[in-house]
Image (cartoon, rainbow, N blue to C red; front, top):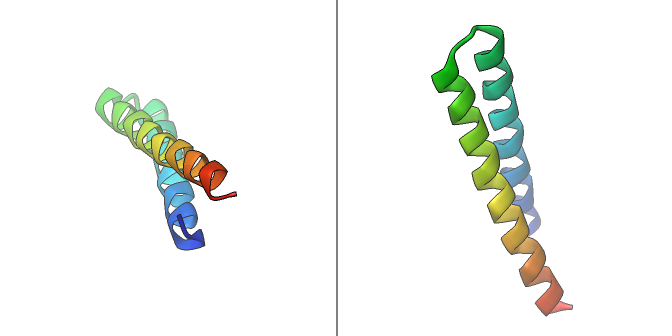
Length: 57
């Protein structure tokens, strides 16, 4: 994957962290769960990129 994809995935992870923190601070369980889900999705994408990078090298 390209650098743009890696940056996009990291941004998605950070957005998820922000949602989770906001959800915790406002006692909004739904927002907190969305944040955790966003982070999990971003982490999965990042793991897939690492596997692809291993096979490229």
